[in-house]
Length: 197
Image (cartoon, rainbow, N blue to C red; front, side, top):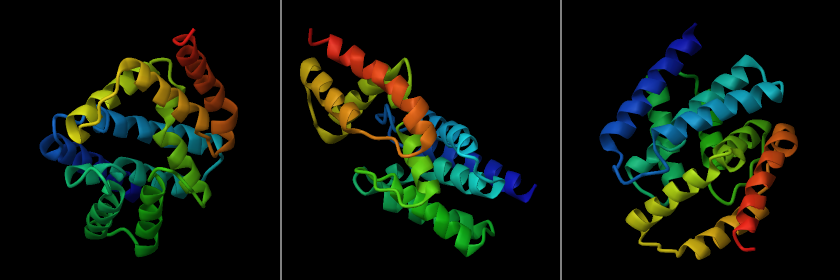
């Protein structure tokens, strides 16, 4: 019960934080993406046979993994970990659990090099959208976000090339990622390749 109360508090905190302090020009990294990652860690974590305690750590990390974007674009992972530690500490979470949440958040930094099973799960969840049928919508939102926030501009062809390269080089770390998400991602790779034919 205590865990559920903290999860509810975290969900409210993150939603308010992102809605009130995040730039409206964050078309991809917003509360919608956060919820996708939260659902991703639940689905992947259960498929990987994780315990309730492990899933709890992952849900906390998934909710908090992008709050650092309210402070900075580059290096937001470390900022997210700092904000997470502050909020979770103030709400009485044990230090060793806070340390695990922070490790999970920092593990999402690209390029990803997860060490533990928990880190592997959140890394796969952070790129869950690679496997979705509407992947192109997510990619389009990221393109607009980069244009507005980073002054990075790509033609449609350049963007397709970049996405094809990214999806082809990307690997999922968990068994669920390798066996389920990878197959679905392959469909998006095929769609991208067909644009060059």
